Image 1 (cartoon, rainbow over the protein chains, first blue to last red):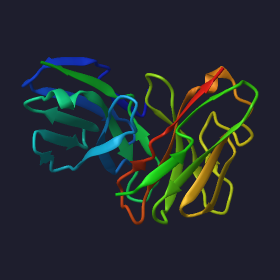
Image 2 (cartoon, each protein chain N blue to C red; image 1 turned 135 degrees about the horizontal axis):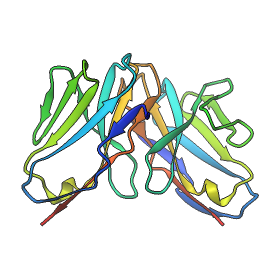
Image 3 (cartoon, one colour; image 1 turned 60 degrees about the horizontal axis):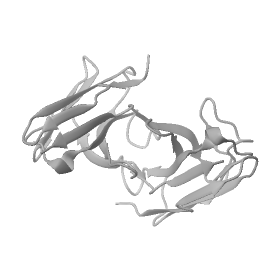
Length: 111
Length: 115
């Protein structure tokens, strides 16, 4: 079993749609959680951190369920510019060093 | 946020040769890593670059194939030795920790094609 598993995708949605990505992690000692975005032929960039209380940044909402070891990302009112690969990332904690990356879920938003 | 540069940005190499990739960060940083991303796949950690000592390699990666240096807190190199077509990939430098906190930042990557 992979340490971090994501929906395999791809997701193809029309503009304006709401789309949700799911991610599970196997190491219960994990402390820090993130969603990264990777555009084609570019490096990954942080989209948002994920907190137990849930957090929202504009059209993006991230949730963490520690009991189920589950992370989600919700994108509302999808834009063409949201098309990218979304990576679920898990870390053992601040300054714990290396992160574990999921395989990514590719989203294509179509007009 | 961290400003990270990598050289070269891309290269085409012949099998059996070696390529050294450089990574430069704009501030002294606690931790530096080297990742590989093969076409259509996610990131695989090669090793943690340790300042002033030998790198810590992940399973499946060895020093003879991927020697790493980190002479100071802002710079690291990764060498891909005795290359084969299977080494064709994107190699990314990454940093995390002080002074950037828990956010992990990536360099722009080095695209390597081995013929």
